[in-house]
Length: 134
Length: 134
DNA sequence: CAGTATCCTTGCGGATACTG
DNA sequence: CAGTATCCGCAAGGATACTG
Image (cartoon, rainbow over all chains, first blue to last red; front, side, top):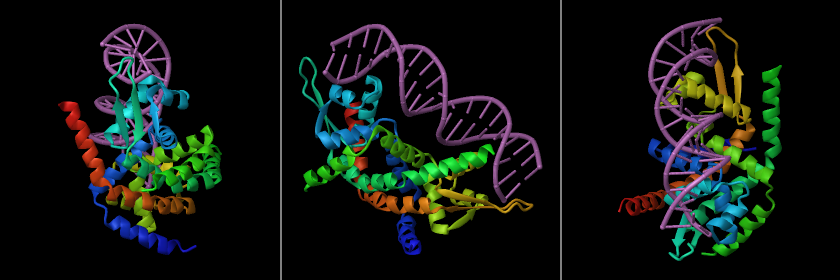
């Protein structure tokens, strides 16, 4: 494989990165890495618009508190739009913003790769743990 | 934009995902989202091989404890290889595994996208905070 | 040089109960 | 329905000191 060529391109990209930019990337990643963020972006990407309770049902196991937290975080990051209809009983719908959709799209090849290499991850983990316990 | 088409592809990808697979993805992401992981993978991608102290210098601000922790995590995930020369004074070199290189390559388009949309993120954040404090 | 060991603070994630 | 309020346990991240 021509990893050399690939790494050169990587280097070109990396050289342009300041510490500030690295912070931004980590912020995006770390938010995406939160317990429920991925599933929410996912669910919204598929369904388009969803209400709080609908999301709660799709996300099997999430508590109201964590769902709200996650949505607030995603909203603050500009990935999710919140629309409060100000009715009684309350009706609030969530959907991906353009930014959120963009992120989801960027993520797809990454997910595909992760799934393709799932065995590689498991093997590595197993080997590491064997050596550790031997 | 034809987000519809894109979302359909996304959906196709999503439908194939079990809760188990989602867990794996979140694990990968959450590790990548750790404070220093990204920088380490980055630095190793550029430099090839690096010693503990060299990494410490490149990563500006990391403590020995966190660097070791990060490296152990990455090693356990199979992204980084550790080679201990067993000399005195100690010499240990780290480098990306094939898996690690692959991950870095997958990440590049994502980083590029994040950087291109940095302003979008900042604007969203600003708006959200303005509405919150008003 | 390449780590451990110890202590501390912060924030995530969850359980439960309550409210407009 | 769509949240808040309160409490809790745990792990991440960091500061500091020490070791083979």
